[in-house]
Every structure is written in C-alpha cells, then in structure tokens.
Length: 280
Image 1 (cartoon, rainbow, N blue to C red):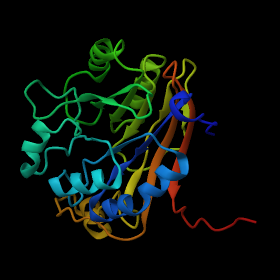
Image 2 (cartoon, helix red, strand yellow):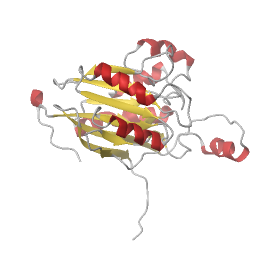
Image 3 (cartoon, rainbow, N blue to C red):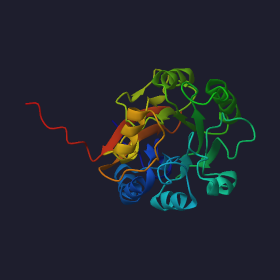
Image 4 (cartoon, rainbow, N blue to C red):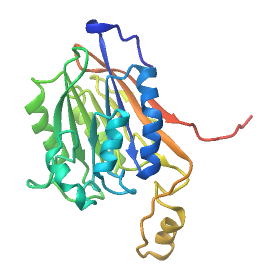
C-alpha cells in the first residue's frame, strides 16, 4: 500500500515507478499508451525501466530510446542483451540516461550507474544496474561492485535504486539482504515473470525478485511460441522472433521516505490482469 504523499516543496515521500523488461514493439507500444496514465494516477516523480529487449526483442535502439523517453521514462537500465544491437553503441557510450550492468569488465561500452535529479526538491537518486553471475556470464562480483558504488554515492544522494538483472532467484534475494538498509530498493529483472514477493526488508530496503515483462505474454518470455518450443524439442538454435499478442504492463511502484530514503510503500502493477477464471 502507498501512503499520502504530502504536497509541493513539503513532500514527505518520493514515488518511483520501475517498469519490468520492455520487450519489442508490443512492449514499447504498451509503455507509450499506458505510462502517462500511471504517472498521473500515482503522482509518480521518477520512472525507470529495463529496456535491454526493447529493440525487436533483444537489445536497444535509438528509436526505442526516444519512444521510452517521450512516454515519460527517465532512465533505462539494461542487462546481458544491452549490446545486441551494434548501431546503439555510440548512444550507449554517450547518453547518461542509458545504463548497462556496472560489473562488466572495465572498458565495456556504457556506464553502470548514474545520479539524477528528482523534481520538487526531493533530492537526487542514484540508479545502479547490476548483473548476476549464476547461470550467466562470469563477470565481476555484483556484491563487491555494489559496495564500491554505494561508497561513491551514499553521501551525495537521498535514494539509491538497484536493478539486479539475474537468472537465479537465490542470487537476487541474497543481494537484497546484502544491501538491506544501504539502498532504497533492490528490484530484479531478466526472467520476464513477475514474482509475488514484493516486501520491505527489515532495515527499509524495498525488494522484489522480478518486476516481470512489459510485452507479449502469448509467448515464451516474449519469444514466439513455436521457435521457443522447437529449441527445447530439438536442442538446436532457432531464430529469435518477438511475439505480438496478449500484451501486459508489468511494474513496481515504490514510495521512498524523503528524509531517510527508505522504502515505506511497495506495490506490484500488472495490467491488464490475466483471465484466471473462478474456482467457486
């Protein structure tokens, strides 16, 4: 549940919306159609989204970036597919509002965290992008990388938001506990399935294992069903083709205390809901 925000320069809370992995054209269109309404409904101050799959289901593009920004997104985080579109490399190098996981080896294109100004005198927010290592690339340690970044920004910002792009739920949960009380929120991405474990950890860090997928759910995590099932049936590569149907908006709404930077409210958004039928 979210609380009363206060008003004007005396706002007591800051509201941040984090949109789960945006997949392809269907996901981009959903953000364009729905985001401004959510911003208005919940008086959102700052919007972050994971966009590593926004370009045809894998990677980012200038067109996708502009569409997300026009819709109202302030910062785009990434993951292991951030570099899939070579045409986006120059933007990745120069645009401070596009992030990739910070724990990639030194010299990898892009930046892994940034500090951004919130509106209405709410102070600055640091956004940190990390990637897990379990069942993924053996890159630098996300735990020690988080320690280093927190040390750099903790005295300069009010809020620290962390997108942990990881395969293993246990690794995300461990990172959440590891950073509890030192960051405002730790939200997972990558698996494209929204988890129902949103919570405020004991020392005030908001946590959820995965924000879910904003994109086509008549699919296998965004991929056309036949191509995905053929991969499992034949154990051979098949062309990745983005699905198109049954598009949903997945996000986490977080409310931070403007004095302490801790999470005081967290709420999942999944729109429209699945048709689950009735047991009774």
